[in-house]
Image 1 (tube, rainbow, N blue to C red):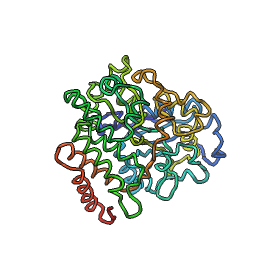
Image 2 (cartoon, helix red, strand yellow):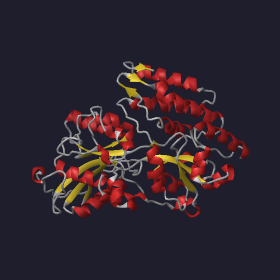
Image 3 (cartoon, rainbow, N blue to C red):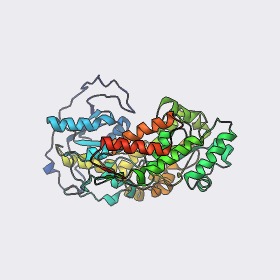
Image 4 (cartoon, helix red, strand yellow):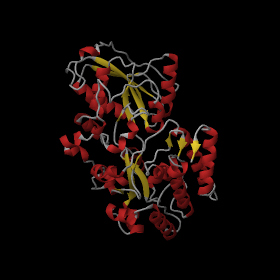
Length: 444
């Protein structure tokens, strides 16, 4: 049985955060983890235990936990939905006050570096767990470790991202809807910009290549795989100048519209046929394109391709074991099942998602295949695995990356509102912002 302890508004579950309640509690029959045996072997099928976790993707939790309970029917879960942006403070509060932490902790990419530095994680690469990080795709490995090199969590799914494109618009304005031909057409962002200006003029100002500046800047800045912070140095110019330069050219050439990213207007534009391309992670298919382009299902509106200058990891959530976990052996069994096993990958495929683990694809080649009616006959699962993921440079994150994120959010808003703001001014604004917010760092 799954116990929902509280309902808190989150991206995929929008309940009032002030209305929390404990719906149901079952008697728990705890089992001493010392009796569970080797951490590499499976647990007995009749093993009894309870695991608690805080998370924000209710559907993911439901699918994966129920699949686990098919194998271990006597295991129960206590799940508390939370806002992903609130979780780091929730962890900190529990650590400061001596409050209870969940047995299994989640960490979203945007806040992960800070979360992983909290003294609350079991090092999964050490005994008794002995996790070998080579079991997962290379591009996700840097983001699964803390500053000491310990693995604090394993990715729930592969959040690889390339570009989705409207095939009807691509045929009309670019002359092809073939992903390989489009990739050849756009080897870099400069060729993309040149065509963007042409499309805008040809359409009479009605069609853009890209919807918004902030989502473009976020995509482009992740392509280089350069750590923003190393030691006491912030690599602003090396890591971020290129993305600011390109986004300003996007704006000035009308390659991009100026929709505010991730607003209702931005989402609704996916179904309006006014923007040819958008960044598209594995999770974007179900949660963005399929939701906001209802006509696209029957018409097979979309195609998937690699982006100019490389693909990225866009988002992602890890699961790890907290030091206060009451049954670490059971927690490890669940995490192995959810993130590394073929059975877990099969459950994940029901959500249209792909595991980061390599072995499941060897054991069941069908796991790499996924099709959505919105993408016609294209096997987008295989395209993500074979074409997009190999062309990703994972970036090692740092504790104060979130401060840089905030500065970039302010700059992107200014670029959208002020058409006269230059990339040089944007870069200097970011440098000044970081000098004030992080005075102990060298800004380069």
